[in-house]
Image (cartoon, rainbow, N blue to C red):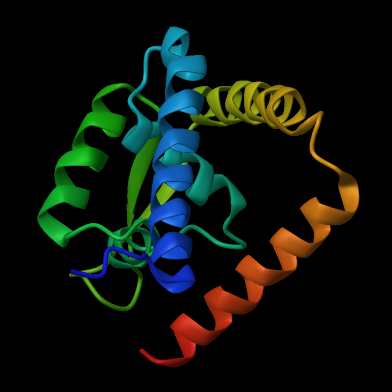
Length: 147
């Protein structure tokens, strides 16, 4: 029985494990803000959007089902971090906008995430970081082109 693991399998495993560990470590770092990983991710994606995303757009960007997104937005609305704004042209569409409290939370999340990235990456050689980043960006383009 051949137990050798291909480089492709090692890469996929390392990519998945590193992404999961990164999110979990950042989530622990942000726990004091009183919001879940899903919540701060939704706030961050909303804040970075050029225009308020629809619930559907936000669900797609976060890779979650519509029903999951609705429940998440319900929690964010209850926490007064976002509002649902109706579309002027389609009554089925609701846009998600950050409140003042949501913008403050995003500022805190961004500062904490920046400090986290600096701490984690401080001992990684800059040229290797550039190469890894370019590889992941290329991989993302390839995967997204196959949709």
